[in-house]
Length: 435
Image (cartoon, rainbow, N blue to C red; front, side):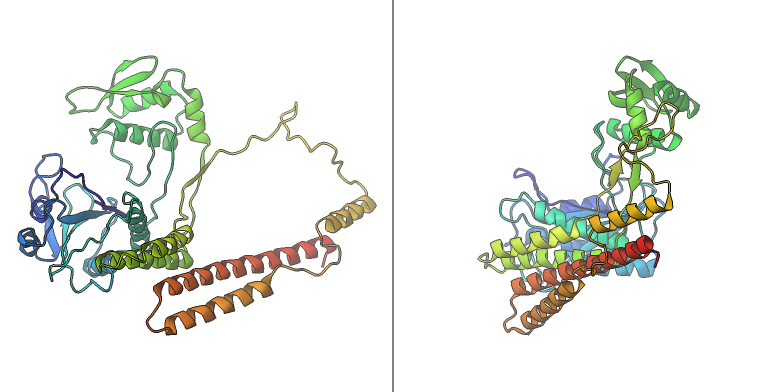
């Protein structure tokens, strides 16, 4: 999976200069103050041009640029043609078309961490000296709208190159994000990442309790320096000192936590063509907000934000579903208990009577099937007509176009559901009446 991370908002007392951002992405020292094993490589843009924006008289005094990174997993690589496709996709999704030829960008590739990362920097001025920010704070939302647009870009990048989608999970032991790859236990130096790696070990190795976990870690060369009632202290080869991990699976009496982790089932939703269209519409809706703000209008923000929120409801559906299988009630002999007051028919007459009763109770006792296909098709045609009328209007009303496209998406979903319902009802009738 690829993850797009963007610096949406800076602290008021922090200067985010173009020169500082360029010096970091092209420097030989990384964020951990260690020397890069692989030199950075410029794949798009002119670094000196980006630096020169700091000297422009119209540039703000502090927050002068937006930077971000598209990070891929270790086994995900792009060839030259795919790199060009990524650059084109980033430009189209980050910059509204009204500004695309007026905004400069620098993209630098890093491969020093084992995986591939594409760092990008965008100045907060156009090449004509006008104010611009690709991901501004909208109103008082603290950047939440821009973050939603960034997540849509992440989904489009993964879909474009055939990578797994980023899936969210919530964990009761302080692990609140699955948007980062599982770190290597012996390489990472952060407690939360070590805990994340060990949780993954428990899940993949089906470890049942803390004793098994300690033995497994020892076999992997991890030293257990201490094991208290509510913690264990581990030390990887090369570490200067041990690190304490507390609570949850690291506590002495934590069998229930291991059972919960091992009983979880994960359902990964698919990313369909319809999901892709919804994300594209979401990004377009955000671009309308950006253009409205920096063209000096700002009178249409409320309506455009409402349209964006409607698009977001359609687009932001990819959630990692973690469910614990329901416990089946067992009888004294370990067999599944049958539902009470529901005797199983034994004779053909009793079976026929139960089928007839079930059919009548569910509205299928010889009645015509009504699934709403006709109504859904009519709604779709109405929405398509409205879109044609909105696009033909001069000057174009973007709000009306967005609302029409949303209506089309909803009508298409309703039509698909109605057709599925109709097919299910027909199959049920054939089964019940042996057609």
